[in-house]
Amino acid sequence: EGRASDRSPWEQAVNVATCVPYFRLARAVPGGLGPWCRAYKLASWVMAASALAYHGVQGPQWRDPLRRLDYTMVGLTAAAFTAACLPAGRARLPAAALSAALLPFQPTLVAALNIAALQATFFLKALRHPLIRTRYASHVALASVGLSSYFLDDKLPETPGLHAAWHLCSARATFMAHFLLRA
Image 1 (cartoon, rainbow, N blue to C red):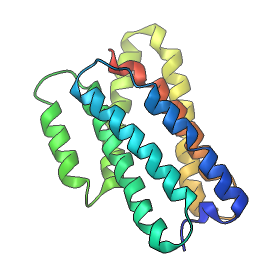
Image 2 (image 1 turned 60 degrees about the vertical axis):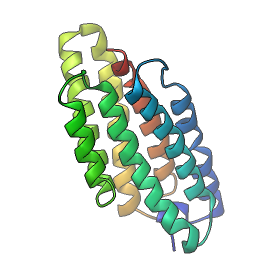
Image 3 (image 1 turned 135 degrees about the horizontal axis):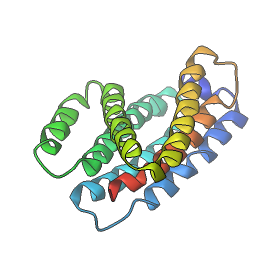
Image 4 (image 1 turned 180 degrees about the vertical axis):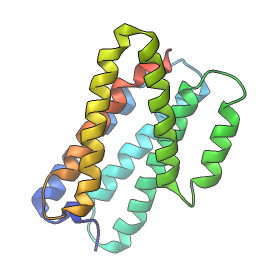
């Protein structure tokens, strides 16, 4: 049956089109910053492709496994981004191991926990560096609209465009956090 966000051919086409920013996001991951950053870049490419594949097909025989892959890749990408942003040291490996252990069973929880860790990192840097505060405020606004769109998509399935708004806002909010990779 699929997700309510692809109820009409028009909405499916919009959701496919709004997967493009995820490819741009993957392309924008800086290179040369170590293995965790490379893992984040690769996971971003696969996440973009899985979202595009999910929204581009019809029928439960393809949509159901592609939806699971999409959720799993969001979790894996968030975990790789978090590992790439954490300072080198003892925290990286246990965080990555916990994410890897939970990922097959709770990909959404893995994504949520890693996104929360990234938000805390971004917030602490914004507190210490006034020049980052504007970027952080924009990031929070986009992330809030994106998450609201994502959850409202389930609550208001007759409202077209909510899932597409999630795609656009989440890609831009994530892009705005890329500077954490160099910090």
